[in-house]
Length: 297
Image (tube, rainbow, N blue to C red):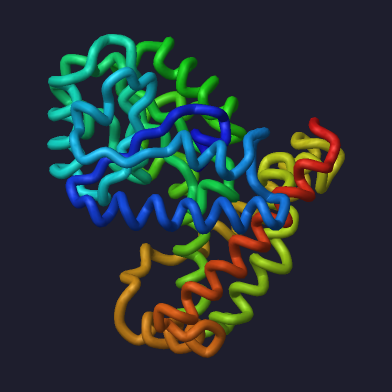
């Protein structure tokens, strides 16, 4: 949907035809709803964008003439390596091979490929139609031109690409996310705060700020600049950080406690989860509109 919104022809490939059929049906439904709510991205109508998206059950036919291939198979290293090995044998030197992986390292994914200079991780954030961040993570042998091309393409389709300068487990977004989850878990596990109140701390506190500015700019603005902030709060931060506990197990009694609290708010059956995700997406859509109306800095 994002690539079509930028006017690009898109071919969807899967080994199961039903997956392609379902995807095309869901895309049509989503695009029509987005158009009705004036939230469709790009300058083309829903029908024009839908015309650009087709399905294909032959991988060689799917990638013929492609400038960019975005792999989106399940988060399984061996499966992804198998897909890239297959692609490596049929592509030329003028296409970018990109993975959507959220954690697997490029040095593992692309090891031994002939076209490794054309390989990159372009990790989107779920749901990518409403959350524009894309992490670009190169293999040590990825050509700078591959990074530049992917960065330009993501910008063209309205995403916000960031360059991760070298690979690291979890990249940047998940390292930050897991740090928050880890401390959130410890606070609930140690009886400091309830699961529902913990979520309020983020959704009605940190999250409001972080929707527009990051943690470093927050520090900069919460004092007379970064030097002032570190001088004023540095010792306090170190004192608190030293009290953080070990990595949680994410199992046992705490899982049950958190699960029960979450199910009070959102029961874990497919219908309730789908409705809550739809509500989430509507919130993100409206937030994205607000952000687009704010002066660009």
